[in-house]
Length: 533
Image (cartoon, rainbow, N blue to C red; front, top):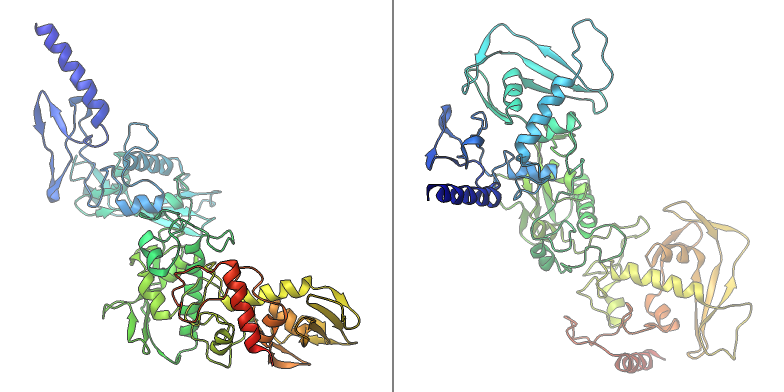
């Protein structure tokens, strides 16, 4: 009976070891008795499951470590580990312990430069010894009070670690405690300077929880901004939506700061005497930031009276991430509030050719309110076809594509039943005031035989249409704007239901009802009849 009981006990142990190793790896059980190890500074070690797995007492517990693997949750996100998986590579060694030991081995393998010796190639270390010893609070071993300096010439960076810290790395802990030094090694910085292989190789776009389409915006943020939480690249430009939007925000913030005082805004710069280091790439950024107040909306970012938008956050957004990790600031941008304060609606980065409109443009989509009303577009929606491109930019480029596709004739055609154009080019060039490109100084004569109407479209205007704007500016025609409504009429826009030119009822501001082809054609016909002389 005793033999059977012992066999049963072994089986239970084997099952427990297999199913609970990751979650309760640090609970000490030996002969049914729980054991605790209490460290100086009130540090409590995890307990372990089996007597042969009693943890190294140098492993100091840290806060905000869901999987208890020795890496804080934020460190795992920066490094590219899963904060909820203690052993991602299935080596049966916790990720933090394994990484710490790997760092220690790498440091020991580095060549040591002695004073007066030539600098070794690649990564190397120097040792700065001081007069005095300190003791490890765990084992009592003594170490020089000095430090090791790790040099990485390729990164132009160096990292300082006390000898005691190296001792703890050898035991699998990034935290250390001694009679002189106590603290925690900067894990991302050490892994970066030692060029340790980690899942995230310097990519600022760390995984975001609650982000179904992996576009660096949470589903909640996308719903709030009117994005599609299951489409990571709505404008099909091969750049995820969050990265698109982040760069647009940075451009707008820098624009507001550079043009201060800006009408409608009050800018407060927090210039601080110091730098902080980005945990992702190691770059040093000014540790200050900006408070942005929108006086028109009576909103400001951030709402906290003592806070500001860190320059580090701008650095991260320029690399496509709303999360930022630095030695001074760490967090996530309140995306919805910042967008509202900046009055931004789309991630579109304006082309320099998108000249400001003289008339009112409520939704800032490069089509004036009067033009949108005449075309029966929505003056409150800058992106009616939901492709994350302002309607005016979209429409201008669409008009240019249709103009290019029109047949070309030398004289007016009375028998034609569709729009065409006549080449009225001249001997001479006109220069774009924005990019300096030279185009013919002439124009295209656009005809619609069915309407018995025509208009002139200068070639310089076509150049600007290609860049997404109906405004143009050249050294021959000067500053002007294409007659948007007349051009749409001559080109018989909209072409198809679903194109940007889809006509909606004036009261249908939320576009809840869809317009079929027949209804669109009937409304277009009614609209054209009203506009005819």
